[in-house]
Image (cartoon, rainbow, N blue to C red; front, side, top):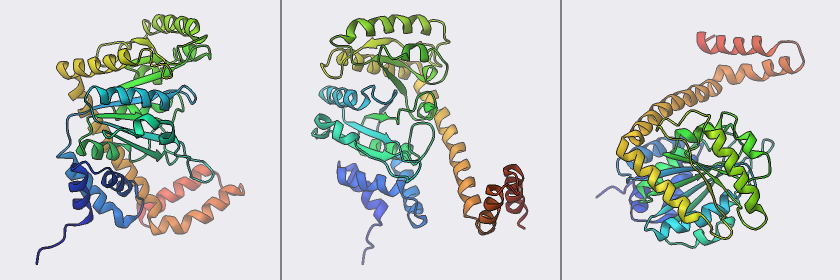
Length: 330
């Protein structure tokens, strides 16, 4: 009697065949925090990495209200028209009080949601810093195994702290709007240094003149900053997700930049460095999880927290005591 394949094997076979429901279930599995799901999730991702297709990974970031979801809806549809299969991983901020999130990005991508060659997955950030969710990289790998060759990652939109997206993507698109002080804020180091392309959105109607001035200011500021590791500085484009103005030029700029980095070898080098970074990050996550799940720490933590809360012990000494117990097995 032949053995039935396990769930991760079934999911991998189904998502390879283009089953979007299976892809959603696979991402749910890797996002699970249940200990029982972790071995299967690791096996699924390990096998998916061996079968993924050649893809271009694009991070899209910008402050809330800049129009990221609307632009992704139009840009993704344009890429599909060019013959690509597009996956969107949209990261929603989690509440610091309840841990919940709205997960509403899919409702703002109505055109893309109706495309056969599109997949949209909203995920909560889970309080993660860096603008991405904890399992975004694994979800991206599963999308590639399912045959999606253009992966768009919409970050939370928290500003200059979104550096983690630079460890996920081949290219970063920074979306801005004129007249809000963004062009001055953009001169600061941080997310500007992680941008490969900058697009000033909502360049229509009364905004046109203001955005053209903002683009001029940004180009002057960028000329004073060091180039990216690729050796290039980000171009500044004008676009409107509402009217479609500049979307074709933006798509062409992203495609040309990806091709340029592939030919130069920079794209391969970037992914190699990202793999090293994710190895270290995985180790750090495992150490933190192991620390807080250790029975000695679980037993000692409530009393020490209470002493810190009451002012009987300072937080630094309490932390050192926890580390001492964990390190020495006492």
